[in-house]
Amino acid sequence: MAASFNIVTASWFTSLPLGYTRVGISRGAPRRYTPGYRMLRRLAPGPWFRSVDAEEYVRRYEAEVLSHLDPHDVVNRLSRIGLGGPIALVCFERPGTADGWCHRALVSAWFDRELGLAVPEHGYEHLPPGQHPMLPPPLRKVPVTT
Image (cartoon, rainbow, N blue to C red; front, side, top):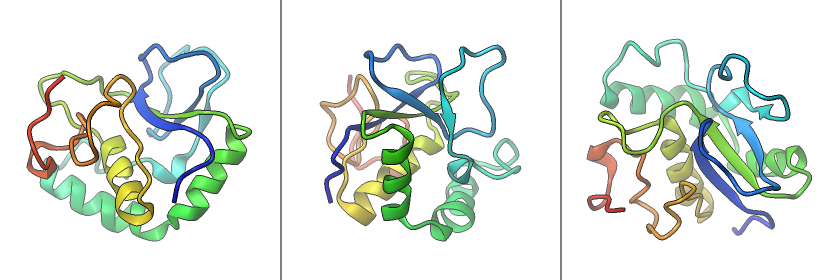
């Protein structure tokens, strides 16, 4: 399934082209962040997000969050939120950090697995699915290169 609009993932702090609607999938937004973003809390991690290792995080996120959602419904909701324009699913982690992984890569992998929909990290569109730079290293199909 191809969305009729562009979806990428990014950090709250990534500079995006004009026209993108930032949709927060984190538990909150940065303090004093410029208005204009939207939130889709159903994709936010649970309260355990800072208290478990990567393996347990992935297990819980898939079991407690993604397994309760219909990816078609999520894409439709994103289309409505962005009025059919491009969407950036955002949270706090920045690519290239020491523990560089984030749940937005799990959302990207979920869309690919369930819908065949590529949702790359902004700035890393050249990478094929399975190489999202924010995937936990054990889940990457091959090492990420920039």
